[in-house]
Amino acid sequence: MIRALLFSAIFFAIDQISKWAILERLNLDELGIYEVFHPYLVFSMGWNKGINFGLFSDSPDIMRWVLIALPVIVSLALLNWSRQFGGRWAAILIGMVIGGALGNAVDRVRFGAVVDFLNMSCCGVRNPYVFNIADIFVFVGLIGLALFSERLTKRA
Image: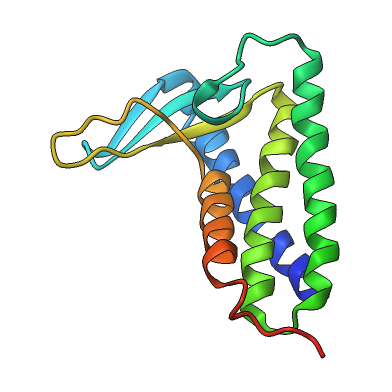
């Protein structure tokens, strides 16, 4: 559990530092868009008040607090679940989910919305959506847990 907590803190810090750099150093909220390597990587400012892909963005303000409480509750449950694992990989995957989920929850507390800024398109397909590092952590962590949870080292 301590390892999962440590990795959670690392992934949370990476997410928050990336958002700080985007807002405070690059001033993307003022620029709006910054083409890093068009169309493969574009920084495009997005404030997501809803859930994935902006769903429920127009919901009442109570939804904001639900979207803050839910990742905290899920993170606590995952942290508790992590006690059954002994290996590093379980701690990394669980830490990714917790760090990313809490990173987005902190955005909702600070800004009232999640800071999204990554847009990636390829091969003639234009992706209209933006996401952030925390979303990547949550996605990779959950996929890893779903695919490999039976192979992770369990405590005796």
